[in-house]
Structure formats: C-alpha cells, structure tokens
Image (cartoon, rainbow, N blue to C red; front, top):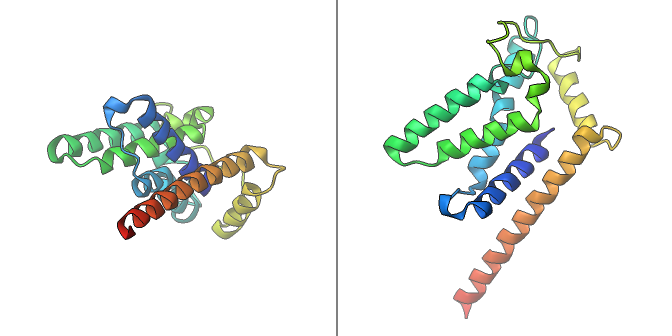
Length: 179
C-alpha cells in the first residue's frame, strides 16, 4: 500500500469506529490520522533503505513491529492521561492501522522483532532508494498490481468523500453567515 491507501483507509477506519462507538468520542482529525498512517514509513523507509541499506536493506523494520506499536500506544496513553491531549492517541492508532494494512503478520520475523531474533528480513528488491521509490510508484498505480492499486483507489475515494463533505459543510456555514 502507498500514500493514499494508508491515509484514506485509516481515515475510513477512524470514521467507522467513531460511528460504531459514539460514546467513546473517537476523534477523526485528518492531520493526525494522516501523520500516524504514514509514520512507520516516515521512519523505516529512510532508515532501512538509505542509512542502513547495506546492512538491513528493508523499508519495513523497527516502526513496522508490534513492539513499536505497543510502545507508541503506551507513550500516547501516558501523554493523554497526564495532559489530556488526544493527538498522540490518534497517531498511535493510525500507526497501528498502517502495520495492519501492510499485513505485517505475513512477515513474522519483522512484525515480532526482536522476539524471533535480532535480524530483519531483507527486501527482495535490489537497487538504490530512487529506483525503489520509482518501482513503488509504478506499482501503486498499475492495475496489474491489484494488491497495491486497489487500496490506493479505495484510499483516494475515501479522501475525496471526506474532502467533498468538508467543502460542502464550509459552503453551508458560509451561506448561513452571509444570510
């Protein structure tokens, strides 16, 4: 999955949870959801594909692990408990959604790191970061790679629905204040 898939699907998950559990007051804050939905890639892609390319050579390392999700969630809960700030909880939840959307359970050596050993599995892709990025971009929007293409289209659709709803509510608000 790529950018729009992660952001859009995670946004949809948060929206559905807020509707299913209205008493829990689950916040649907786009900027924090978007940041959290991309956080594992913000950390792991540069770290594993650029800085540690020779030793690890993978874009799914530390921030794609269960231990990272647990520690991020615990830290977020502590901040929420002491300061009442919900943004870290949103980021932690969205980051965990990213790990689920990447189906990290299919790569247990990475997902359960360090419990199954200290080594991360290397990507099968060879080449530098630019070649990797171009390859990912090509696959993300090529219908032949439906495992990436379909979630990207779904994500774009969800983002467009939210953007349209936001624009419509702004227009209604502006119309009421002008009257």
